[in-house]
Length: 365
Ligand SMILES: Nc1ncnc2c1ncn2[C@@H]1O[C@H](COP(=O)(O)OP(=O)(O)OP(=O)(O)O)[C@@H](O)[C@H]1O
Ligand SMILES: [Mg+2]
Image (tube, rainbow, N blue to C red; front, top):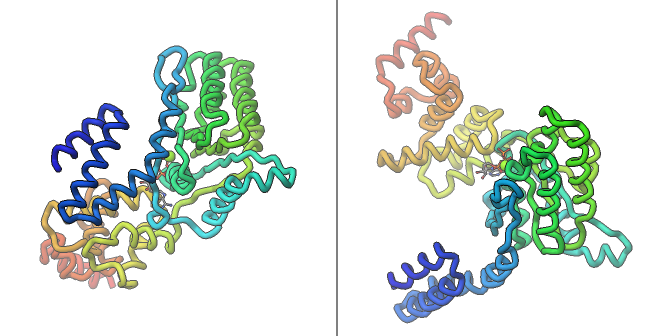
């Protein structure tokens, strides 16, 4: 069985699709014979699901390259983001759902005489799900996500930038895929550089023309942290604009539940700990909350601790915000979140220090 695994890895690294498919089939057969039908079935399901996608990927082999650097300007992936792993407020979720339905029922719309283009602009602070939403849409639609590297596309020579934009749009034209223009503001920011205004206009116009000429099967999703920099003319091109914000208390709790699910902890199912944690995470992005919680989980694993605790998470939040521990301030922080003396002691704070701070607190009262 190990031989098949080695062959599959070799095939993967060399991009040899046939080798992967052949050896994965052999592996599935052997597993079945050796009495592991569940795993065998799982592999067969993946093979039938993914076979079509692997073939579709072949259509994309000749990727567009930057005229000067010869670097590839796009990256093609088949993301898989599960709906249960992503926290979306109900309005955003509904908008995404209807965007997907417009696309899936585009023939109905055409028959009704409505010619639609499928373009979405996502904006909002960093780490709040723009890239994740693009990946999520690609995964529920089963379409490849063609991510354009705008930094490589925005060539030092503006003349080439317009050409590069054209190449990318030509590449995706008439293909069933999602073109994802991440950090879309790179184009808008050109305005701040010392470039000739006329040249810049050409780039923006070329972008607009390309967006306008997109039709049929291609979906365009653009993302930016700096929507205010976008030219109004570009802004108008998008049929759907969504703002993705930092999570509110309820969303923070959902994210904590997703990340801590499967760990032993003293938090889930305990509103007296979940609610203060949501308060401690206020103003954090989804991505920062994820980083903090994953750090705590990693610590728990490598230090052989029995479970993820409320006090450990608070300590990590404090570290994330302050980058160091100022002892007195930290102890007051823990007291503010009603961490008990026992819990403080468990995260390594000497009892003497805890008692000192409590005494001082009493004196001030
Ligand atoms: N709504 C969400 N639900 C669950 N996880 C999320 C959500 N938004 C972001 N994350 C997590 O945060 C991390 C960063 O998210 P993402 O890359 O989508 O942010 P972004 O808005 O594209 O940020 P940037 O502006 O820096 O590109 C990812 O690991 C993602 O899993
Ligand atoms: Mg992003």
